[in-house]
Image 1 (tube, helix red, strand yellow):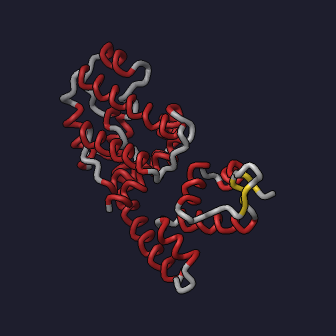
Image 2: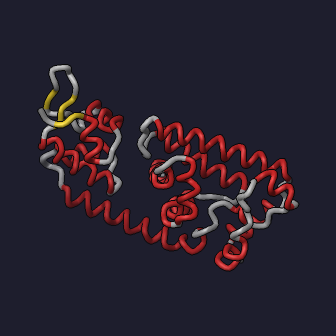
Image 3: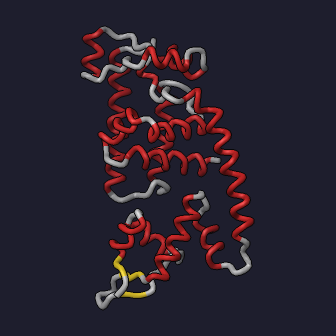
Length: 252
């Protein structure tokens, strides 16, 4: 009888919506149907899905994946060589940025000019300056640190309340999108990733796409920041990282 779409989604670690989309565009159409008309996938379908996910992990767009799998004249090695060059360049760029952005994700941790009472009113028990010494040791003198310091020093309690409200509202919308099963490269997820980048630019420092990609990697690599996003929605840190990367690719 084969495997149901839910079973295959579980095997592969993708969403049912993703499999439906692959079927709709003809990238992966299941080999059979149940008597009730539901999709049923056979072993050959699973093999094809494995190859699709391999190319997707390397960053190939869906149309190129289809060409690689279906065009007998397509040269997979040439595609892989080109993708390897792109990945190598991206790794080099991220390594160059890593030192400057490792823990400067939200500059609210630095130089906040509020009284203790105002800080508690805005941030509760989450002390936004607990990483001040670490941040200055790591990033003192960098343009992201200096720009953040100058901006946040001007903010009033009401400014911080607006910033927090925007952050909370964004987080709720992102969590809701994840609850719908949206993939990280879904247009809506990429739009929210872009909104996240613009929020950082608005409130803290000029967050260019390369910097944003570096931040996304840190959201996964640093358990403290992972915990922040996981508290909003389990799996959010990695999902957001992938959406940030997809958005940077889309804008490139």
